[in-house]
Amino acid sequence: MASLPSMIALGIIILGIITLISISWPNKRGAPYWPTRMKKVKKMLAEADVQPGELVYDLGCGDGRVIVMAARHFKARAVGIEIDLFRFLWCQFLITILGLRRRVKVIYGDLFAKDISDADVVFCYLLQSTNDKLESKLLDELRPDARVVSNTFLFSAMPQIAMDGEYGFYVYNVGVQPEKN
Image (cartoon, rainbow, N blue to C red; front, side, top):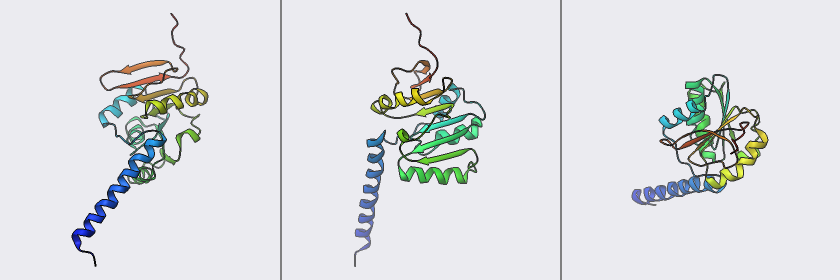
């Protein structure tokens, strides 16, 4: 029979493997999990002018902090899309214990395969290469008055209406035409 120290070591190794898989799997599909500070989340929601009753999507919602804050502090409805099973399950647990089931939903799956045409505001904290692939989907699916907030990374063809250099995020409006020189 194995000794307690060897069983602990095996448990640490298994936990490490699960953690590596959890980190690398979403990275290959869009972005690694890297949580945004709550102060920044609130600033992004405010800058996007999220209004009560609007529908906010978070593409790659991670631990659910954007969708939870959108619902609790801005009285919006929110949908998160998450491809990482562990984070999806965490979000399900979180919105249940916070009593947000009526206003918040989390969808398990690939953000590229989900219809987001009903969104008023879309949040992204993805890699630049993922934003480059995602931009045409956003322009094709979203209504002209929809806003897009991107944490850290840019969208090149979408009209930018605001940016915050201190916090490092950008706000776009799908229907605003860029000024021509």
